[in-house]
Length: 115
Image 1 (cartoon, helix red, strand yellow):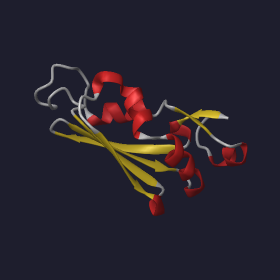
Image 2 (cartoon, rainbow, N blue to C red):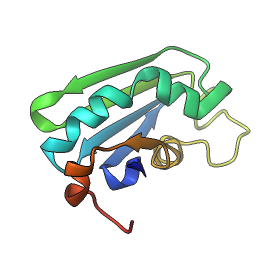
Image 3 (cartoon, helix red, strand yellow):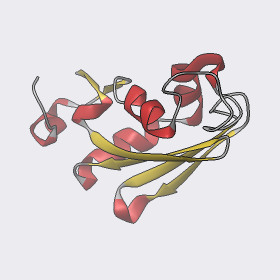
């Protein structure tokens, strides 16, 4: 079953300078392997297209069912320098929540939100 990321995990995001920091936390540890397999750096960069000008790094914290993406060059020069409207880390984090993931039928009861 294909579902948006927001049904599998929640996010916390922020920014510093020209770097966006997005943490993705599975609602249940049993859902984390779905994130680990499908929410790759390539998938995240594909979601943002050319918006991220620098390298991206994914840090995995398996015991917490979480991962953190550090996206350099993602904020148009930095929050105080960009001419882009609403280009902050929180906006980028929210935009990530609609990435679709494939979830096994056995994990569907662990999903959150409306079907």
